[in-house]
Length: 148
Image (cartoon, rainbow, N blue to C red; front, side):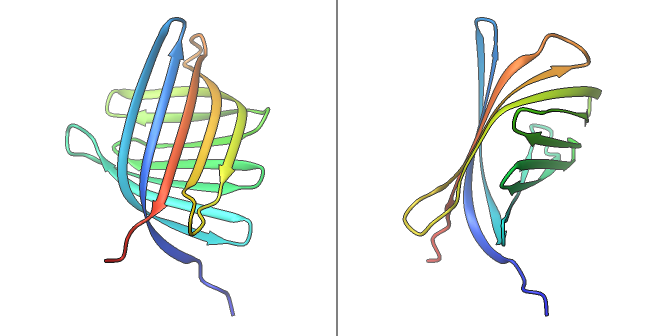
């Protein structure tokens, strides 16, 4: 018999920093989601709405040596991060399609524990449609929802 994953309701804060020469753009998103863990794999799922009230579902799979970010809905992509490796994917949104080339520099993951929040940090550079690469830092912090 297969063991089902434990599903834990979590509060998620996602911070995206994009550094381009002297400019730094920071976006912070806060959502409610689910954390599922089984063996050496953690899955974080949540949905967000854009300014046009369109929904994007995110499915983040964290494994010891790689992270996969799959988004569907208003934004569609399947981005893979493996430390010190170059990956490619296609990013689709309402304004069109872009080819993304990503070089992952660093992945750090801290599991959610009773007295400690979970945290995923990824440092990488991305080039869109062959343009000069820009530095990105993605930090996802999550904590267990109170069951009151």
